[in-house]
Length: 204
Image 1 (tube, one colour):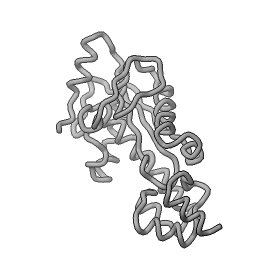
Image 2 (tube, one colour):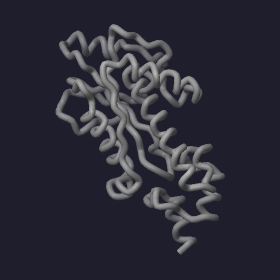
Image 3 (tube, helix red, strand yellow):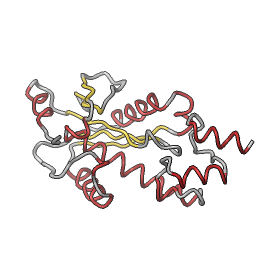
């Protein structure tokens, strides 16, 4: 599957000029916020190498994130907290983070291309399965969301030592699950997720 600007070009030919790609990062994690980003790429400032952030090495993601911020027409990163995830579920929290990112765009978008879901925002939009692997604007958003979240978790690792957050970024690895059982959940663990709930019940 190739990541191209074909769909963006098709939408642009219908009259839209500020087409934002939107994606999230961290839905499967046990710890911390879910992040989202929205990016309006500038067709006059092309970027090479955009791809689904999960397929890129950490160093390459960081390099591309710098270029995206420099060359995009507009970009924004936002999040929804662990408590919001527990209150409204991870899908709705992801959509909330996406809406916050879209709302922060300046200039605003007039069309949305979203990875796998829709955003509660009053512009025309398309939800695209595997959009981060197919559409450059969504790939750019996936990169900014992933880099932003990893930086956040890296800082939180210093506040919550012993869980290995800097290594696994909050995902349910064996190391993370063992630390949960040994230390118990923090206030930033997602209590609506089964491994966290199980660890919480064992420590009560």
